[in-house]
Image (cartoon, helix red, strand yellow):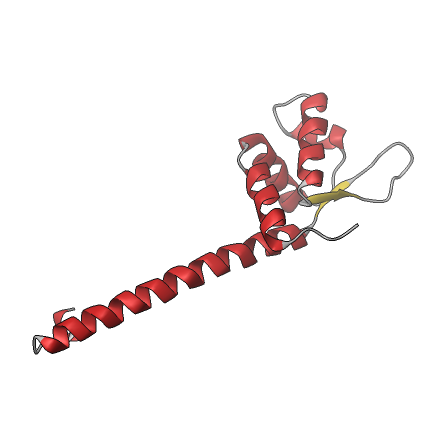
Length: 123
C-alpha cells in the first residue's frame, strides 16, 4: 500500500476539520492527552456513539490513532504528521501567492519607474 500524497492527505485533513465536533475532539486530545471514547464522551456534550463515529473519521484522515489497548480501553492520541502534511500543502499555496505578489510588485515597480516614481516612495 502506497502512502497518500501530500494533496490527498491535506484534503482528508481539511475535510475532517470542517466539523466543529471533530475539532472539539482534537482540541480535547491536544489539551488533556490520550483518551478513550468513554473519557471523551464524559468531557464533551455528545454521546459515546457520536464520539466513536467522529474518532473514526479523524483516524481515517490520519489525525489520530488508537494507542495500545489496556483491557477494553483503547486510548486515542493525536498524530501530528497529518497536520504537518496539511501545513506543507498550505505553505506551497502561500509560496505560489508570494511568487505572484512578488511578480505583481515587480510590474508595479517597473511601471512606476517608467513614470519616474518608485513603488516604495508611494508607500
